[in-house]
Length: 519
Image (cartoon, rainbow, N blue to C red):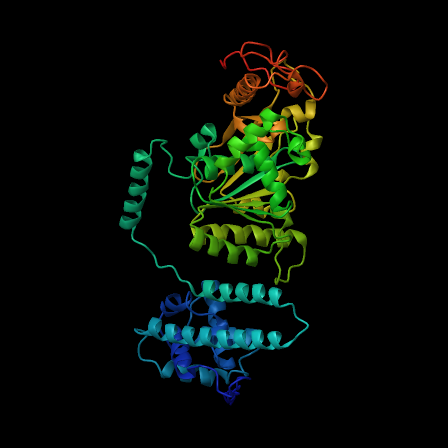
């Protein structure tokens, strides 16, 4: 007759105390699972095999779990047989010990309460082990303390997340919440239930960016991914005062702000870099830059940002700055520090899942830019599809919305397509996946010299407004200064005499409006 082995009491390293445990309750739970038909179903979401401190009890619960997963009956005989198949029956004390477990239990009425106690003991042991591990690594001076901090927070977050058990909710309060959101959208002049992006046709499809959504904006290089999110950030943070955070992994904060200034002031990027501005351009810069000061726009330029670092900073931004949306430029430059993964594809998959979990935890939309593979280049129309997402199919799976930026002009290098349609400055934001709504193409106007995306019908108005402002500034200066040389362009041509009127043809490089868009 096999005898149940004695438990080896393991002392903790730091205090010399025995770990938290209740082996008697563990045995009662096992006996109840074999005695009552539905007992296992009541505890399977609270306990795992590691929840049991006694190695014998752990092996028995593993056998019970195997039976449960295979939808087989759970009783003394089936558990004994499963242990025999696993080759562990003698290790746990044989069939006699299994019979003893069932003999000790009269009812499973309190099994959930008992399981909760065992689960708490297991959590306490995990925290003790976690703290001891952190202490050991902290004493090791070869470890980078910043990396240790990030790893520590990531592991602690995982422990806390594993303990969260969402209860089943009756439908009534959920209906009330949904009706409240519908009413708020109706009371909103824009009719949007989410954050206004400033792009009307996009908002018609999405009703604004929704809380807890992961939005992927993907494109091939040079399509304008960063320009698009900066244009959107300008619309939201500067024009509508919505707090936004941008994590830029590719550029420095100063580089990003220079591009934003080019966008806001309608100044060419090269002139921003060189500082060679005409007097009227300086006036326009000084006038429009005032709108940027004080905007609730927060930047982070950490290179190689890890998902644990992002989680830490994002929580702080939401808590302290009331940030309502986060943008990441771009996903493939992130890493999963502290996690042991087999390949880059697995790492990107982990990052993607973590971003979705973070959006849900913080209850804000997260926008992540992503690269596309070269498959688009081999197609005749160059139009991207979901399978073009680079490095991981998990991005497509995890995202609530996937958008592609496509500019036909980039590939044709012409102002018209093969059918004679005007494509100068034309950009499509292709909503290819929308978990809670429709898909479609959003027509936008890309002004390359300013790295700016506008609503299609407004793109031309922006150019004419800039020309009009320049003309008024010059005329004002001419009233006080008759030195014509001050108003010569870089080629020596008189800028005043060549300045176009509102009805004049646009100079080279500016876009001609379509027939159905009046000035």
